[in-house]
Image (cartoon, rainbow, N blue to C red; front, side, top):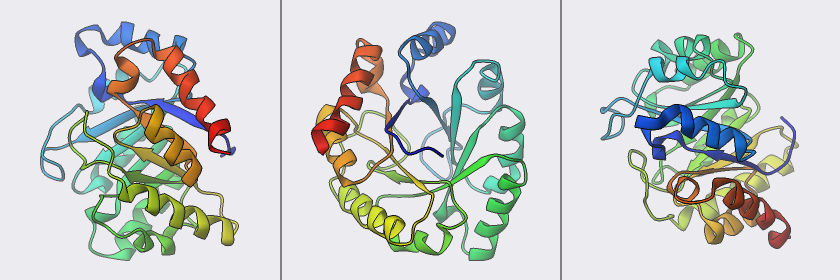
Length: 224
């Protein structure tokens, strides 16, 4: 994927009674992607939404970034691709064995879909290094996954720095995405550390989304 700063509003922060209008807001805001958090109440302590909601968005012309915070993601990944996902990100912690992670990566790629892997805040970043050649994206969680509106965890910045150093050293084509507590201040930190994709929820949905996305993208210049 092309290297540039992307902003992805997280639908978890939307008004679900007015989902159509919220998607129109996202499109008018010139957001690059829409981030869709799928939670099962087991892998993380919350339940969000599933295939019916993602399927409803299939015809909307925006890149759909689906983050599976679920147990046994191999059971559902292909269904989410059929529902319209452009990128499927699953968690390193969802599997005990490397062979299972590699198998799911292969399944997703065989469907001509981008694939990402994510880690929770307490998981060390170097566990992902053996998979980076196969991945299109790594998602760093800068809050504990499960709920929106949390504060940014500062250790996420160091993880991004280490990951960016490894990716650049080995000339890998893998984007770095960050999710959790993103606003103007934390976006600048994340971009300076080496992030490519900023996921933001309440910060974007509370107010003028188009203006706020523009402000986040300006942080790329400020971080130089």
